[in-house]
Image 1 (cartoon, rainbow over the protein chains, first blue to last red):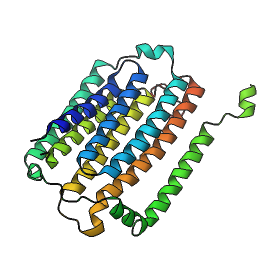
Image 2: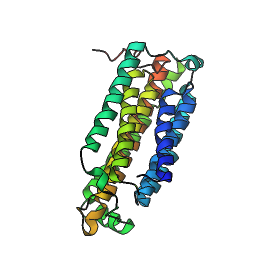
Image 3: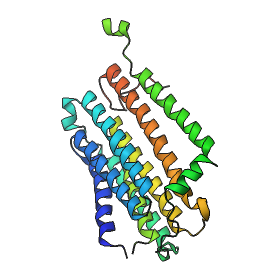
Image 4: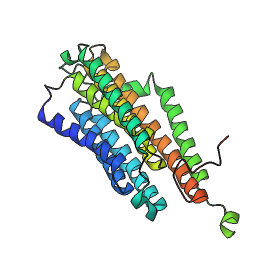
Length: 168
Length: 106
């Protein structure tokens, strides 16, 4: 059986995700998303993976959530206050598909022995992560750095305002 | 005591919510939120299985965590590109409703 702090963090994570998608105003949605990401970081702590949890807080809440908030402020419009509601058919389809996936996963979990794993086996710390990243997976790290650099340069190029375009 | 099944269930809930958002929403930023939620569901699953299953020895014990670090970095790069595209779409069309962005339609 799950303990209380797990239940609390589950509520924060799932509730934040629902707020992110259903909040009337999109700024509140962005804040809800940040809450959901924070809940996932807390779940990483519960999984004895503190390094991943801190990385999650740094990257997602420190960078991604702030980036999203700035974009929302850049592109917000009055008419978003009354965002067009989804048609009832697509809403029904979305709810049914989402529920079907959740129920399918729940049944899959129920009919396996996943709930018999109650003891965390691998408590690897910084040392093992550092060894993996700097030995076997060093090429992955290099490629990832390249991808990140290319993505940032591409984003800057995309959102650059041309001088000629501006003068028109 | 938390079991592996609890974490998998939370992950499934996040994934289902993300699918719901992808189907019903038309605002580009909401779609980005939905994708982020689904990426987080996958990461949570990865760490949970990596920590609970007794497969690893030595430095291999950190495999799940290491892959999630890579995944988080990739998601950050992807978010930067998507947000740039949203800003450009807003500048060109004055809207971020994906059903209104028809200039790339075949």
